[in-house]
Image (tube, rainbow, N blue to C red; front, top):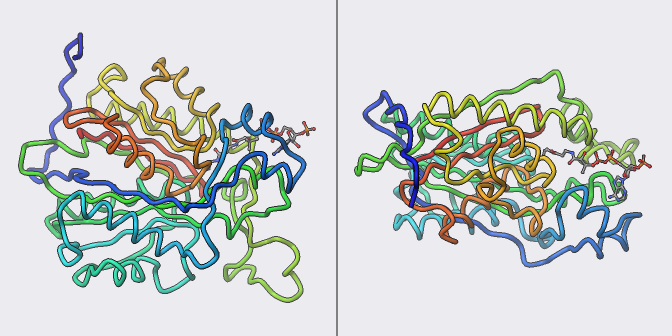
Length: 341
Ligand code: UT7
């Protein structure tokens, strides 16, 4: 029970609001621990744990594609929502590791979940992709263009990880999370406020330089590891803290809420120290932050929806709670949303 009264959130101007009515997630079975990694590169559990908070991550099987993980997460969300595939109007799939460059991986998911009436597209906004998807999806609902939107964040990062580079290979994992957006008739405000932003000036501090049309992989460059994630960790760390703190403040201000009103923060799951820095700057207790990066590492676009699903199914967030979602990634891209659950 709350001791102090909540501030009143600014009610949405549009009559039709969008809510996250259900969530789902899927992670592959295979666990890769810090000790396993210490057999592969010059690292150890102590370094990884103290610098990142990560203890293990999941690795997809060779034949387990991003689309399949997405479909499993989506089916779990659909079951929770009590809907069938043909009720979905739009599938937005955020990923940096699509099954292939085209067609959109969302189209493969469509066939796997029987979403015969859905329009399908992928979103390329790296780790921030899922919240970009939520923002795009809610616009379709508010505009009355769609009733039911499926937003997925899914990654098979193990396929673009340089397993010889200790600076990056200890950080990432595979998995998928999904959410169903709909208008709810019970006066719930749903998505109260959001903020999405990008800064292409810093594209080269977190990117995968090869494999696209600028630098296709050829016989000549095949051994240069261009089709793997490159990151200037320290620079990304600084940018991440600054952008996510700013985003939290902007979304709170837009919603007319304060940090005291927020029941749960679901931050991007990249590094425990980044989350602690955000908590300190916002003067919020760490207990309000939902954290599962110790189990999954950084799953990029999948991190927020996997955490959201675990928080939802685990009872960490309940109907009526104010939930703050905030993320940051390559592009650079960053985003935040406040949801009345
Ligand atoms: O999802 C998108 C957002 N991504 C992020 O937010 C990630 C942001 N960055 C980070 O989380 C951190 O910068 C890292 C965890 C990637 C690195 O932590 P750091 O405290 O910035 O370490 P560092 O890169 O400055 O490296 C410190 C030392 C270096 O050795 P020297 O040069 O001091 O001798 C590294 O070579 O740690 C060494 N090192 C390692 N040692 C053992 C780097 N990786 C490892 C490793 N094991 N895996």
